[in-house]
Image (cartoon, rainbow, N blue to C red; front, side, top):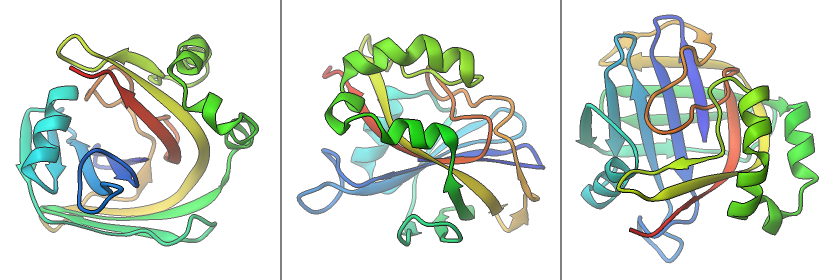
Length: 200
């Protein structure tokens, strides 16, 4: 997931899911984008109706659009640029180096980091260290959701436009986005995460 802010006030959360129950192919890979405009209007840009319906049942939006989502995600390395075109949104994100938190997360064994029990245990720490961030909470419909972070890299630059209007240079994700129980880190970041949602 990539979370970035803009000087204009729009905040964008890009979800590039390599494995899921949705999307084409055996792995079900897909990309969706959650956008909160400067006035607080929350928009989901989803590639299919199935993805839109599922994500909208887990998170909260004022508007849901099914649009063509095209994404270029080169290998994660300093200087790599991820590019996304999704309906009215154009986004290019430059990947930076692994953060100190990223190095700590890399030291946690993969199966443990992805376990809901681990997300429960580290949630109090995450809430204190990163404003707006939580690793567990309600996923809508009475279900629960857990985020297992595996790595964090900084985002060093971004260009963002909406309906052709440049939204200005990269800025913190402030105020925190309001799609669900937690936001992305305030500092623009690319986070490798496992999302576990309780079955309805």
